[in-house]
Structures are given as structure tokens and as C-alpha cells.
Length: 129
Image 1: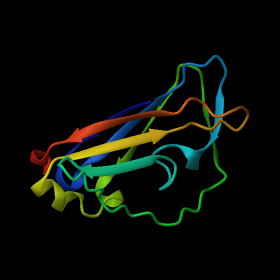
Image 2: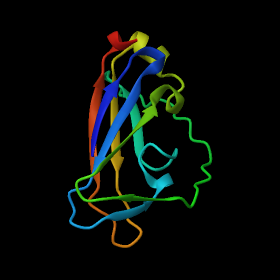
Image 3: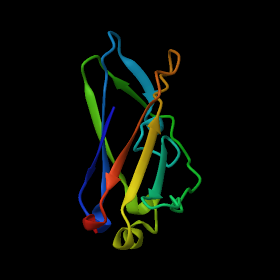
């Protein structure tokens, strides 16, 4: 999994690329992809200051669909998370402070055990806004 920031201001997104290095296809619920549902991945935004204030997250109730997606060996799929939808105060915060965005995701195939958890963090400069 690769995650990077794209856009700026109100159009700031987390662009995600998910690729398979396994020998067999992986079947997953579409709603479990990191960009597909509100609770499919862990996303935390924190002010990059001494207090490390956590930004408020918008977390509505998800209603996942039963649609199944197959990720074939060597294939990749991409998606985006609109960060201003997840963090309503992000634009205002970026006028005052840099932000650290922490993410974590675990792919859970339907036919096998969950894969190794992935994670990382990204620096969002206040000059982005």
C-alpha cells in the first residue's frame, strides 16, 4: 500500500495505491478498501505543535455493500480519501499549523487470514492551504 497527499486546500486528498504481490488472486469486500468506507482504515490528523491536538473526525455510520472485488497478482487499484470530509476543521487548522496525518490499514481477504497491517504518516504543511 502506498499513500500520498494530492491537491491543496479544500481539495486535499489522500491518494492510495493498493497492489498485490501474492501468487493468487485476493477477494475482498469493496467496502473494506481503504477509500471505500468511513471505517475501513484508521486515519488520525494531529496538529504538529507541542500539544499534538487531535483534529475532530467526522465518522458517520457506514452501510457497507456486499460487492466483492478481486485483486489479481501484480495488479493494482487506486482510490482517494477527501481529507476535508473526514476532518471538518482541517482547512482552518492548516491556516494556523502544520498537520501530521497518521494512517493504518489491514487488508482482510474473504478466503484467508488478514494480511500484515500497513501504516505510516504524512506531513501536511500549513502552506498547503
